[in-house]
Image 1 (cartoon, rainbow, N blue to C red):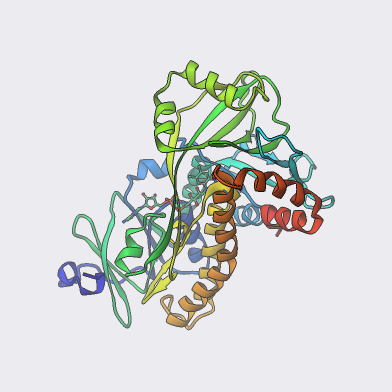
Image 2 (tube, rainbow, N blue to C red):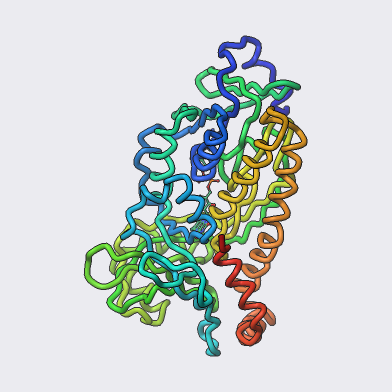
Amino acid sequence: MSAQEQKGPFTQKDDMMSDDIVIAGGGPAGLAAALSFARDGWRVVVVERAPQAVLQSPSFDGREIALTHHTVQWLKTYHVWDEIASELVCPLEVARIESGGMGGPPLLFHAPEGSSADTKGETALGYLVANHLIRKALYKVAERTKGIRFMCGHSVTSYQAGCDDVQVALSGGQSLTARLLVGADGRFSKLRDMAGIGAIIHDFGMNIMVCRMRHPLPHDNTALQWFAEQQTIALLPVAPDGGEGSLSSLVLTLPPDEIARLRVASAEAFSAEITQRTDGRLGALEVVSERITYPLKAVYAHRFHAQRVALIGDAAVGMHPITAHGFNFGIRGQEILAQEVGAASGDPGDARALRRFSWRHRRATFPLFTATNAIAVAYTRDDGPFPLARRAGLMLADRLAPFKRAVTRMLMDPI
Ligand SMILES: Cc1cc2nc3c(=O)[nH]c(=O)nc-3n(C[C@H](O)[C@H](O)[C@H](O)COP(=O)(O)OP(=O)(O)OC[C@H]3O[C@@H](n4cnc5c(N)ncnc54)[C@H](O)[C@@H]3O)c2cc1C
């Protein structure tokens, strides 16, 4: 039964219409959208199923987010960047891709000369910041922004869209009335299902483990992505924490049973195994954080809108992390939505504005979504011609200047 057919929670209108836009989900995409809408003068309510304390002080979730220049500029414009201590931001200067075990030269990407400089005056491909710090900063700014209110500890359970408004039912029996409902409830979005929108779901059959590791050799602000037989490893540079040596974030992709084994291994056994898996290239690695795992599934909604509903963030486009674009696309998507809604008739749920948003966001994301999945498959299969093709591909890519320039541009997304 679709949300529109569910009449139950809406037989009594218990709230006066006081909000223009309801955002389901107070993750990074939902919070960013709230800021954009509020700046345009819309009254916004963010409904988040987690308690307020989680938004105020989200815990470390293992993700180090590579932010493009465009995203950093957006965060600066909304004063979110000011809430992230500069010493916790790690500039990314080089991306190095290797086909481990088979030799061959690495594929290297640098920021081009003359691109915008970081705080130290160096050019950077992008900036790495821990996800929980981004979420905390976004919430801090949203909380003090006029026009945004929060209903934490509530889930959106159903909705009913009409010609003039949308009624939104929450867990606990309350309901809200607004003119636009934004689904920002993550890649396994219930709102997408409620709206009857299907999705391409690409299950890679692998899990990801992320954690921080300390090591004696410097990382030189280099992100290393390493594809070897039976494993994909990334070591992402992390800003120093005052402890000895350097810090990197390990992103390890393996079959689920291997990840499950490593998750419960002792810290010593785990550190020794990762040192061996990385050929000791940063010296002896020592795990210094929780080990957190994620299923590896990419998601792309068939449409990004329905009547008085728009999907943003991972609910619209849930990327494989290999090209580091999920959050960056989340920022792009909510920007496009706010622009189209702002340019419309004065009704934030205007059908034409939602169609234009859907079309523009699809055009901005679909090519990289499909390319990312193709790369991820090519680099995680070890059967048939894949290993040799990987090596040949890297050698060829290294010689193709236009290809390298295009990838660098994609990584940086200049302002
Ligand atoms: C290992 C890893 C590394 C990554 N690295 C990068 C990177 O380098 N660069 C990059 O750009 N991206 C990266 N990403 C992707 C990025 O983390 C996500 O794209 C981003 O967090 C998605 O934000 P979101 O707000 O759409 O969804 P989420 O963060 O999933 O937030 C959804 C929110 O909705 C709430 N919610 C769910 N259901 C309901 C409901 N019914 N009602 C109310 N609230 C609800 C949830 O509690 C949650 O707070 C990475 C992801 C992973 C897993």
